[in-house]
Length: 104
Image 1 (cartoon, rainbow, N blue to C red):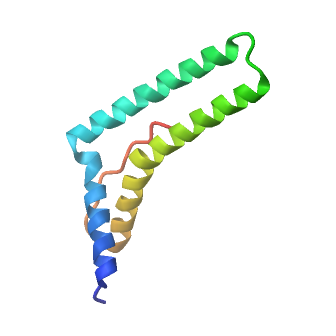
Image 2 (image 1 turned 135 degrees about the vertical axis):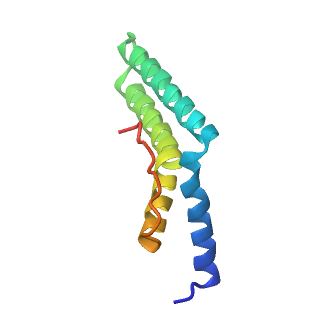
């Protein structure tokens, strides 16, 4: 079966994204994002333990933290890992190294 133009475009994108985890600079990005997550977690905990923080403010802070971390995780872990899975399903002869998930 010959892929359509749209399928070829998607496969090309998946191929490019699947290569990201093997790029040295990408690993630096992953490490920096993990450091950012840790700093945000410490800041959130310090704010939650501070006096005078009401329940509504706590809810807003935790939702912002969760959303930011989920966005980082999607961009750095989920998108490349999904590309690897799509290519592995399409081309099982080549095994591609997966992405290490630092946010679970």
